[in-house]
Image (cartoon, rainbow, N blue to C red; front, side, top):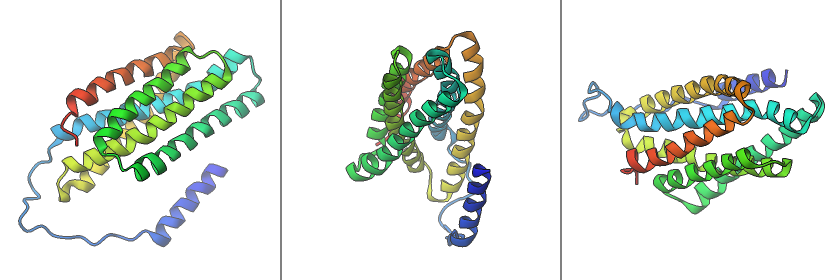
Length: 220
């Protein structure tokens, strides 16, 4: 019921306060020219991997915490909820303070956020106590809070003014794809080994470090 109520509230806020922005024509721009999808695809890959990893970790954590610490359903919900809440707060703090107050460029956000996220996941893989797992999720949240804004800003810089909406829409689809892949991947991997979801996400983020350095080296 709470989720449904929040959805209704969000829809009401959009109807009440969000207006259609003024559209500007670009007479000197050929809007029929195809979009530079080749330049956008590396950013879509980051969005998909980040969202898939985040949703896989969130989905698997409930099973992992319950099995690892032999908890009942009530204790599992409480401990997992607390850990994920701390992770979310860390992500918001990262976006509100690191991104806004420090004024880092998209390249620095990406090249810092992805490794920080990998450090957080590695703690989830090798940590054996509840405080360590919370610390791992917190560091992962901090990294996510830098990676996503950096990637979106970098994507926006590769799109021309009349392509901003198209690029943002396709990036939203990439995020949605990751959210579809993540829970399925997490549950399937968990049946193989409890640490398999975390280990797989760690490998993905290590590959993303290389991807950002090689395929997004042009980002400023």
